[in-house]
Length: 84
Image (cartoon, rainbow, N blue to C red; front, side):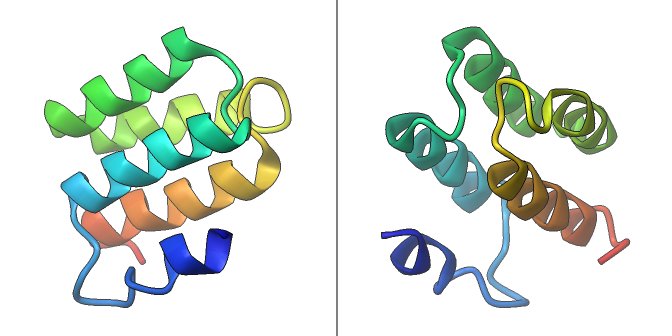
């Protein structure tokens, strides 16, 4: 299932909306196990708070966000920030 989600996110196609959809997919898969954190991540994407998103993901990695989900979302955010 995860490859079907990640496959379309090739360089040049990553955007906040697709990254937000990834957050929702990771919630459905249980990779983000706290609704409040999922909502916070999506709100940061809506508001363009990408560095705050990265910081929150790093803080929650291995806790309420699986390491795999955090890694994927951080890479997307860093790409959007021009760091990836």
